[in-house]
Image (cartoon, rainbow, N blue to C red):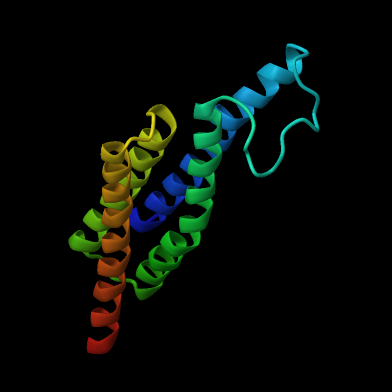
Length: 142
C-alpha cells in the first residue's frame, strides 16, 4: 500500500478516534452513570463540558476536511507517482490535523491558542494544495 493511502487511512482513523474517545467516552460515561439519557445530546453540541463542546467542533473539522485529504491522496495514488515531496506533505498534513484537534480539544481557546490551531489548519491546506500541484505537474508531463 502506498504511503498516500496509509496517510489517508490515518486521517480516517484519527477522525473515528476523536469520535470514539472524546465524544463517545463523554456521552457513554454520562449515560452509564445515569446522568443523561441516550437522547440527551443535541447535535449542535451546545451542552456539556467545555472540552466536550470543543471535541464536537474538532470532530466536525475532521469530517469537513477528510474529503479534501481523500481527494488529493486518491489523485496521488491514482497517478502512480512516487514522490518523496508529496509523501512528506501527506505526512505533514496528517500530523498537523492531529495537532489541530488536540489543541482544539485540550486547551481553552484564547487568541493565541486559536492562532496556533489555525496555523495547523493552514499548514494542512498548504499540503493539500502542494500535493495537488505535484499531481497536476506530473499529469501535465505525461
